[in-house]
Image 1 (cartoon, rainbow, N blue to C red):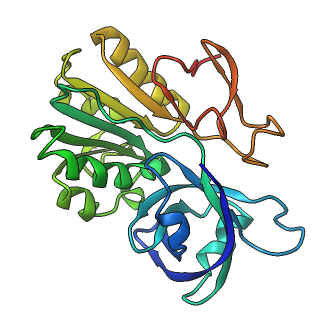
Image 2 (cartoon, rainbow, N blue to C red; image 1 turned 90 degrees about the horizontal axis):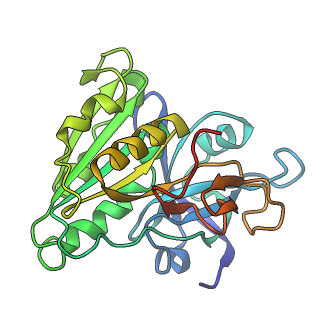
Length: 264
C-alpha cells in the first residue's frame, strides 16, 4: 500500500476522560486507505525536540483520521495542546492490518488494556457492517482493562456498533475488580466459532495467548513498541516471535496471536 505524507489540519482535539484524548485530523487521503490495525506516524513539532515521529493506531477513519492517546511524554503533551485549524505532519497508513474473522465465527472478542483499545473502534466499525452478511449476527464483545476510573470512558461508539462492553479496573473503581483476565469467563471458548483480537501491555496479551492456547482458540495481537523510523530500517521495534525477530512497524503491528513470544 502506498504511504501518504502530508500536512493536514486538526479538526478537533478532545479529552475523553482524565487520562485519554481523541485527536481528529482532516486527512481524507489517508482515511480512504487505512485499514483496521494500521497506524500513522505523526511529527508533533518542527525542530529537534521531540526529534522522532510518534506512532499512533488509527482509532477511527470516517470523515477524519482519529487517534486515541494518553499524555506520557513531550510529544503527546504537545498534541494535547493542539487546536482546531493547527497544522500537523502525518505519514501513513503504515503496518499490517487485522485480518477478517474466519467463516463460521459466532463470537468475536476484542481484549484491550489501557491505550491498547486504540485500534479496536475502527475494527468494530468493520465488524458491525459485516454482522448482517459475512458474520451473520455474530456476537461482538469488548473486554477492557484499565488501572483506575480515570482510564475508563463511556465507549459509546462501541456500544452503538453492537458491542457488549465489559470493564475491569485494578482498583475496582469501575466494573470488575482486577485484571482484564477476570473477564475471560465472558468468552464462549469454542475453537470453531470464537476469534480473538488483543492489544495492550505484553503481560496482558500473554494472558490472552495462554487462554487461547488452553482452549484451542485462534486470534491476532496488535503489538505496541516505540518506533523511530516506522519503515523497518532502524530495527528498534524488533520483537521475538516463533519465526525469529520481526519488526512491529513493517512485519506488524498485527501478528498471529500464537506467533509472538511475549515473555522472554
